[in-house]
Length: 105
Ligand code: FES
Image (cartoon, protein in one colour):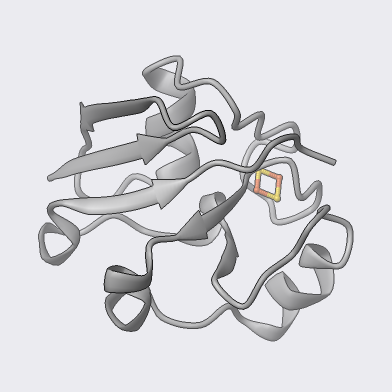
């Protein structure tokens, strides 16, 4: 599935993701700027914060309560905030658009 990352400055990058990978892994593997993933995907650092594009919020779903607790450590959290290491890519998310925040942490 294809995923598009749009930076705070409005630069967009579309990459090919593997189903089963997380959005954070896809970003790191493809050197997408703006996503750090310091904890390696354990939902323990909040440096993989992204905003899910409004058109995709229903398909991507809501954060778990553990993820919500960790989101408290991200800056400028919005209703469409998610930790990208907790978003599993599936074929149903082909075309997904994620926005990266101005900064992590
Ligand atoms: Fe650390 Fe997502 S990579 S919370």
